[in-house]
Length: 288
Ligand SMILES: C[S@@+](CC[C@H](N)C(=O)[O-])C[C@H]1O[C@@H](n2cnc3c(N)ncnc32)[C@H](O)[C@@H]1O
Ligand SMILES: *[C@@H]1O[C@H](CO)[C@@H](O)[C@H](O)[C@H]1NC(C)=O
Image (cartoon, rainbow, N blue to C red; front, side):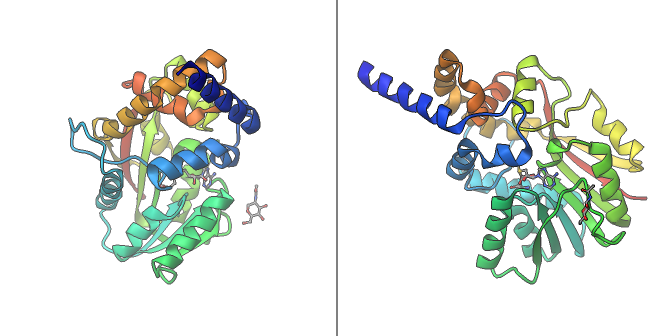
């Protein structure tokens, strides 16, 4: 038994050394790490967003079904019948494909090369090439688009990564038609604990705002008409799962001082332990 423990620990230390770790990784470095790739693939089938559950639900399974529920929620919040959407950070394309199946034409962008590859493959496999365009694009710089082509723009757990949220919002504003709808499904760590600061830095989530930050940001950006729904209780089952699954490995990593190299394990456990130091919100804003 002990020998097995040594072998496991040695193996983990070896992985940690191979992986290395930057203190403030870029978005691409975070998503390209061995741990992120394995984790998102194994636990979430590369759909990189939370599931939506009934309040008080205990079981996170089946996760895919809950993730479709979250996509449905975003769709309902947008409240648009049809038209052209910008998916501002598509990941592997699952949200964009959901919207395409609902009848929208979707322009999907992302900055992580292997996500773009994956999204293109998935779009093709689902025969949606005529409904979903997948292109490289950084939401800080959307100058290649003419003004006002979109009826709706959304982010599914991507705006948190913004280095300059004001800039990103003003880009979205420029690209929306008057009366167009902006939907943001994002974590809002407005009541940060110190430990969560590490988590946020290591997963390149710089967009952490002070209490009421989203409200101010939206008003400043000209989105005077908006509503914010708090979905924190409805995403808990998935984070509880991450917290429980990651707990023991995380304690072992801490003994060896290598927890920073397993940022997703750290995030899963720390967010769960510090539940209440942040919220999960659904923002719906309209361009006047
Ligand atoms: C948590 S994943 C969500 C992906 C997808 N929306 C989903 O739900 O599966 C965040 C995504 O944001 C992308 N991203 C981060 N910063 C970006 C930027 N500046 N411009 C475009 N995409 C960005 C990342 O590459 C990653 O694919
Ligand atoms: C913005 O993107 C365009 C191409 O779409 C590029 O030519 C330009 O250099 C970029 N600007 C910045 C500041 O990165």
